[in-house]
Image 1 (cartoon, one colour):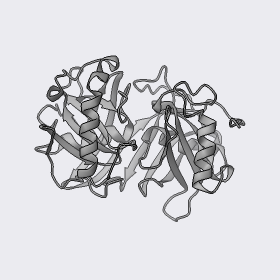
Image 2: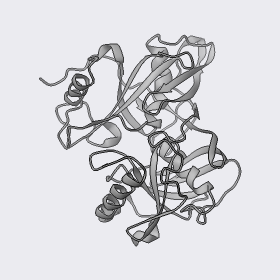
Image 3: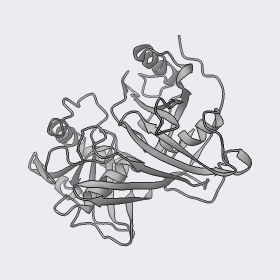
Length: 337
């Protein structure tokens, strides 16, 4: 399925090995990792298309399904469960209905999703006319051609998703390598820094951003320790987002690295976390942001992503976003031997 601006393979947990090590080994063979082209698997040779969602009936009473997100390396044989993916999350509700885990409503369906990675809950609401998932609609999201049906995602308990705290270092602002940063975690651990401090405008194309990769790595390695995440050299978190004043009517302009490859847009929960950061007085980006209305318009290399964040400092009351998803293929995949 395409979920938001990502693409991934969605599996029922019962169809994969129960042992995590065996499961990960099978998924690497399915994706074709490690290989820069993932030529012998179904991966798309990019972190945004080397993703897996594992879905099962919920083990608790507060949700309908459990959703485990796994980020697979492309050139490395790595499988990480240390983060959520808000883009693939957009496809979880429709997948649950398609696979009969949740009954469809007549008109719309809401699915309560337990995000296993962070032990938080999201509610996805999407159209199901006649009890069938309808992927067609007129909602456009930047980074995806055409339009599709709107899927509303409302989040709760995303504060401190991987680090245990909205501000994992205990500070609104820290200094690393002489650069002011805000380390925030509202669904995704993110290090926010001003693009100008890297000698950038913040409006560079994705192809122009690798020039600062070494500095980004130094920043995130030190930030990972400050955030209580330990040695993040082989981890996909924290992400790093460089911010600049908006230039297309948005709230803030962003350039994001995942964790070192420049993102063609920005992740859903990454955008929520960046939006949360710039709302806070004293945070990096707060003085660059232009606020208008309840929604935060996050500019990125291929357009805009609108999120909603309600803060009751130092806590988050709620956050939400509108995404789209589409079923691309339903069938059998053959892992390489």
